[in-house]
Length: 79
Image (cartoon, rainbow, N blue to C red; front, top):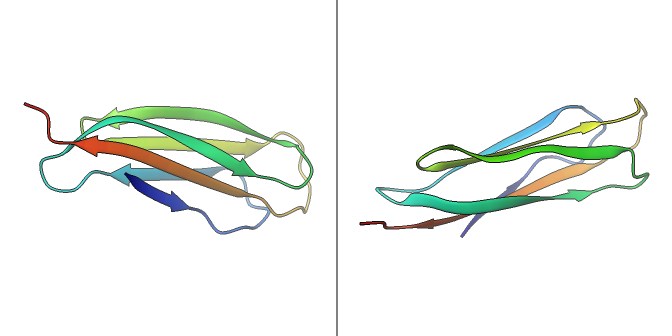
């Protein structure tokens, strides 16, 4: 399992792409938002290639509150 997170700030959009190591393929993934004011939305969470998972989130209302996007990907050797 891979995981990563953006910095916690007010920038938008936030995008993360996780890449499986070696010859492993991505089996699935997901995302989580760490928000303070509930004005952010997860807009994309998908396999962007055989070995990558990409997530994106945006602010639905422009403000100065900090927020963070986290992502995870499940990778495995597939025959």
